[in-house]
Structures are given as C-alpha cells and as structure tokens.
Image (spheres, rainbow, N blue to C red):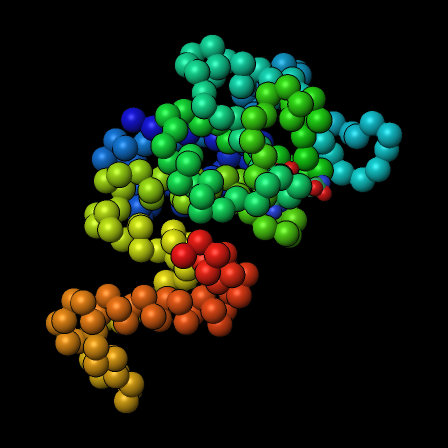
Length: 231
Ligand code: SAH
C-alpha cells in the first residue's frame, strides 16, 4: 500500500478533502494510507512554538528547523521514503507527468510551508523535490499538498472504478479532453451531438479525438505545439 505523510503547522486545513470522493475511497480500499503530522507535536520549545523571526529582518515568520527535522527524522527512522517533497512557489511546476511518476512510489513525505516559508537548511538537507502548483502565492502549502495528493492518488490502479477514465483525462496525452454529455438527449433546446448517440464506437472515438485536438489547438496552443512535435 502507498503511504503519504503530510507535515503541517495547520493540520486542520487538511481535514476535509482527503476523506471524501476518490481519495477517501482509495483509503477505504486500502490503496493508500495518508497521515497528517502536526508540527507542534514535534516542537521542543516549552510553548510549542514552530516559527520565529527571519534573520536580517523583514516581515513575516519562518518555520523553524527543529520541529521539521525532528518529525522527518522520526519518520525516516521507521521506514525509508522515496521522496521528501516541499511545496513552494519557486519549485518546479507540478504537472501530470509528475503525478504519474509519483503514483508509482511507495512512501512519500509532503512538507507544507507557512508564513514566509521554512528555514533554508530544511530545504538544503531534507527536501528531495520542490513543487509549485502555479504562479500565485498561497498562505500555506496545505492546499498544494492536497492538490498533489489528489492528483497522485487517483492514478493508483483501482482508485478510479473505470481504469480507462484516468488515462483519457486532459494532459495524459498532451491533449485536453473534449466536451462530454450525459442524459437527457434534449435539455432546454440543446441537444447531444448525434455521433455520441450513434452507438458506432469507431465513429465516437474518431469524433472524440478530433474534438480533443480542436479544443487543445484553440485553448492551449502551447500544449498543441508539444503534441504536434511528438505525434
Ligand atoms: N515567501 C515565499 C512565499 C511563502 S507562502 C515566496 O515568496 O516564495 C507560504 C507557503 O505556502 C510556502 O512556503 C509554500 O509552502 C506554500 N505555497 C504558497 N504558494 C504556493 C504555490 N503556488 N505552490 C506551492 N506551494 C505554495
């Protein structure tokens, strides 16, 4: 079973999303275990402080190295980890290919920053991968940790009922997924394209491929260029 340990100064932020839908079911099916660790539990400070002022001055607080080192060293003493991931706006952009690769790993640690971030020595000494989920700044790494966990866990075989479905999603083949429809055939005067109702699987497949390419060309010329190069 895969194991993900998420380390956070605000663990309450991680409460909901990991217990429902696909990730929640993957936990129930024992495809993945997810543990959340509260940095305060590892603080040796008598007031359980986990942050401090930045050297050199300036606004904002910095997560101290001691609780993070204690937590990660304890986890590492219990099992070996494939990666220690830090969420950071200056990290590599987290993409589908990263989710694919990480879904094949056994044990992962995800460290959430907060306030101004973490003491650099944590990144130099413990962290093996740094990821950003986009060019904007969030208050903490908890939402990015959940974004990455969701993207990774849904790829574990068995997490999604229909195994085909994860592979047909956008980005898996450098293309966006085209439009999808469900019942009813007619809704407020708008109807479902004829071809999808034809029952002709070959025609449906061809239509979907065409739509997928059209959608990508229109919406994501950058992706389309990559797709053209590789196909
Ligand atoms: N001072 C930092 C921003 C800190 S934001 C800087 O300018 O780069 C506080 C924490 O939120 C970060 O340490 C990181 O863990 C998380 N975070 C914020 N935005 C993020 C993003 N786009 N991707 C991943 N993590 C992010």
